[in-house]
Length: 216
Image (cartoon, rainbow, N blue to C red; front, side, top):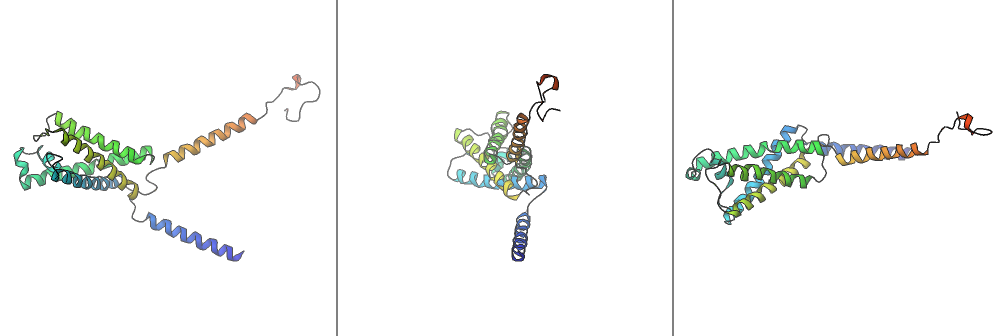
């Protein structure tokens, strides 16, 4: 028995150390997590956009598009103006990671990548399609393939930001929503099951002869 106790203690200590090591480096602040995840998503998105631009699948880089809100259409080709647009684009992408964190805090980790892809497509509908229709960009996309490429890039942004959130967030920050709901449902069903098995109390004046032992 002593050897078993020693073994259990050793395994428990090792398991506790592993859990602490896994929790090291995790982010507990929602804002910091969202900004970092948004930055990672933006870098992934820009990489995809650059590849598509090199293959002539889109008309311009996202830095050109964002820069056209600040300067003229042709001036975005200058390095300093493109850099200004790229900085604005990266700030926007980083900030958009914060609402995604709060979405997961509200709804849990269930079907996380579906939520991330939907969130990315939502940013596309607002920042690309909607802003273009409102005339916010001086460098307006003209070809349909540009909108398809932008949709792909924004969905990739949502997926990569989701991946960063799930892997960088502390376990206490994001709940397991479905697991909690299932436990509550099972507990409620368990109580209702035993409530149905509880015998009803029969009044003494309605029972002929000796009353059963459970009659009060």
